[in-house]
Image (cartoon, rainbow over all chains, first blue to last red):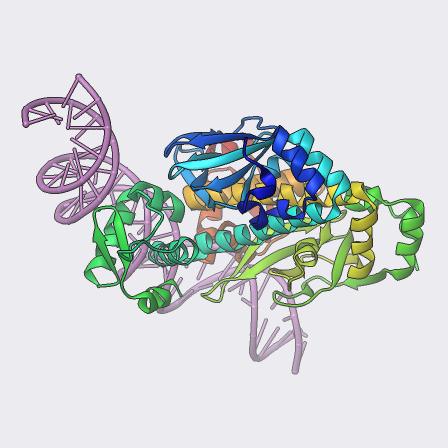
Length: 226
Length: 226
DNA sequence: TATTTAATATGACAAATATCATATTTTTAA
DNA sequence: TTAAAAATATGATATTTGTCATATTAAATA
């Protein structure tokens, strides 16, 4: 079993506040998992009873709406934790987590994490700050959905993917979403998303090669996103 | 100056975890304020440096979007706290707070509240749970905005106002929002909102008398909201 | 490799929603 | 009280977006 003390991603999450003793104890009680692309880490409504620390890979957090369509609420990547909200609220998770690429994750049981809350104030503050950041992001997202057009939201989302997850050697966006997933991220019909991507392509804003998307004119996209 | 120890609304917020000594100290450092309907408690971008405890009244939390329109993110009422996220993140507030009716609020300076985080674990957990609740609510709201029609969102919002804030003796909704505010809550144009209210009225789902709205057929509204 | 299935693409059309114009009512303030 | 301003209401129309149909291409699998 790998040691948390030597794990680099720990430094990027709330877990960075843990002491050496806490890390040693953590190494013993955590379990490591390989998640293949497309596999579900947990599903909306499930009792997770702990948190996942993402060592590698990206996943989507989705919520099923009344009409049966999934909406992608957030993308989460290496260094971040999953399932904090649910654990603190002591409720089933309200979102599903599905791997967008192969992932390595570690599961830390609730009993262990709750101990940190009691004894390690810095850890508590870190978690709180993370959740506060999520809340602010959610507020922003909400206003965008309410006030911006689909075109603006698509431009913004492409820029977000670019800025947050970077690009490959061929300049294409690193996160590869299907048209369907992209649509469920910006909150529109798949066909509308495809159509707008085609438009952007024809306007020279982006370049489409199969699933690959290259942002050609970032300034124009920024202007479009307002 | 009124005493926090005897204040009833305290029991409805995270402050319920405070000890007698903490409450006595709080009474000394808090300031009480009367806010008239329409007045601003704080504005997006401001440094608030503390939290507000709502003793009486209701306010709206709004966010200005790129197109210059306000969006109502949330309504907050007596017993709840304002400005927690901003204080914990140590950032300016991301939302504006405006009174929807006359209000009584108390301001508690940051220095005081941060002390509770250090010394009172139950208080920390209460705040965390509240923010987690807000985050879950925000996720739900986001999916609704992305997937539901304006009609569905209007029906849902009317039911929400009814269930959360109750009704007057004449059965009309207690929170009186202008058509403009209602529109900015469901994320649509004012005219669309007015038109749909007219439709609901003609269908017998609601009854409109000036600004007053009476829900006549709650089951039909529920069905409409899906 | 051949066959099936899923994803992407695009046209045609329908439905939802926004915008603009204008009338009417209510509220505010001179 | 009356004039001005703001809020509400409704029609006409434009725009945006969704839905359905149907190619086309790419991916999965027998």
